[in-house]
Image (cartoon, rainbow, N blue to C red; front, side):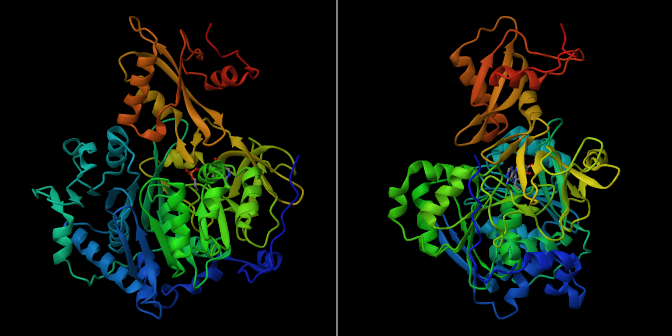
Amino acid sequence: MQMQPIPAVKGDYHLEDYEKVVESFDWSQVEEQFSWYKTGKMNIAFEAIDRHALGVKKNQVALYYKDDTRREKYTFKEMMEQTNKAGNILKQQGVEKGDRVFIFMPRSPELYFCLLGAIKLGAIVGPLFEAFMEAAVFDRLNDSKAKVLITTPELVGRVAIDNLPNLEKVILVGNDIEEDHVTVDYYKSFEQASKKLLIEWVEPEDGMLLHYTSGSTGKPKGVLHVHNAMIQQYQTAKWVLDLKEDDVYWCTADPGWVTGTVYGIFGPWLHGASNVVRGGRFNPEDWYKTIEDYGVTVWYSAPTAFRMLMGIGEDLIQRFDLTSLRHILSVGEPLNPEVVKWGVKVFHLRIHDTWWMTETGSMMICNYPTLAIKPGSMGKPIPGIEAAIIDDQGNVLPPNRMGNLALKKGWPSMMRSIWNNPQKYQEYFTDNGWYISGDSAYMDEEGYFWFQGRIDDVINTSGERVGPFEVESKLVEHPAIAEAGVIGIPDPVRGTIIKAFISLREGFDASDELKEEIRLFVKKELSAHATPRQIEFRDKLPKTRSGKIMRRVLKAWELDLPTGDLSTMED
Ligand code: PRX
């Protein structure tokens, strides 16, 4: 049974009269917010940092950073200087407009300086999550032909520098760095770098961000975003995050994922908000403490985290003063009605679900503050976005019919290409102008969208997107494994966990030790989040006559569902 809608609390939200806005809204109305509207000079990093540093906000804190060993803060003016210095280091190493600069390190102030510094030079930044292992790192640096990598002494061992002919420089952020013709000591260069930098002005369609993400087939795809995306990043941060002058905002995502760049960097700073970054792993106590210490007002997180906090219970919450919170949002996976209910109970606030993807570049379908929330629904398309449920032929379906969640092509933050792979890019679009998300959903009579699942086999585990093909390919590299099929299975906390069905080569016996060895193998080569939590050995896996593993049949086995049409299965 569905929960009653939770009405919006009347407040002075930016999106006061939604119906009126949606009638007349046009993305070009947003342009006058930016300095390039008058000067003609565009760069998203200038708009996010320098514009405020050169104005009345210069002494306002832009970045509050904390982890187990560091606690720092930087005003907009300081951020301008630090990002200029980082930009100068990169310039000295030959970085030019359009070059790919990758950043592979845990959250730290330096990560933010370097990311924005690179963008100031017109470079395209590829952020890599720190948990990535050798094979995952190699695929991304190789495909993008990265020229410069910024990483740490702890992580650099995972980079096969000798096998990456385009990689010219590796900048190490750490102590006791020995420089050579490739390696550069970040802190040493930083000392000497100038606080002044000539920003590279770009065209709206020039690239700035390359996020690799998984599909159900093939290697990860490089999703390219351009400077023009700032229009929608700014506007969604205004309407949906509801950011205002004096907000202290905390997005819990790592910049290795799109939420961590778009709403961990650009959204808040395009608004001149104070942005909290907490380094280190999830820790319930310290999360609440972060809210209390900084007086966080707007908090953007994910269902897995909320479910973990919910599981720990309310005693912990009682120990902290969380009354600064005024607005909470969620992204990345379905937000359970239970969690929305919990949010109302413990924070006295609604948790606003938002739906979007790496490819969409910013929020698309949301529970924005003035909307009544139907728990379990992703909300409605924001003004300027046309969403629909379409069938496989591209026809729009009426309300309450399940189908492909699709978006009318052409929103400002839409990805502009798949790196190196124009054909893959084309596959996202129908001939009649729809972008196909790969999600299935339905829309109710009131225009609310309800997520149903993925149409392809992409796995969403704790909000992290994993391509089964990538895991299967890695598994079959293990000497004991003949064939592997990987699926997602439901999990109360993580939403979905990864399960691998494996058939062994002749001469290998199934055992718990072997399972553990296989798990470690994937963890060491790919990443922890792509590691199968469950492994089941089978003599034979279901395959089509052309030899493709039928994940659909594995799922049916696992979940006791009907297997469906088996006519293409081999005997
Ligand atoms: O399946 C949808 C799910 O996450 C996918 C996008 O993953 P990624 O590109 O990693 O971006 C995640 C953060 C922007 C979608 O195709 N997803 C995202 N948000 C939601 C969601 N599923 C249900 N509800 C959501 N609010």
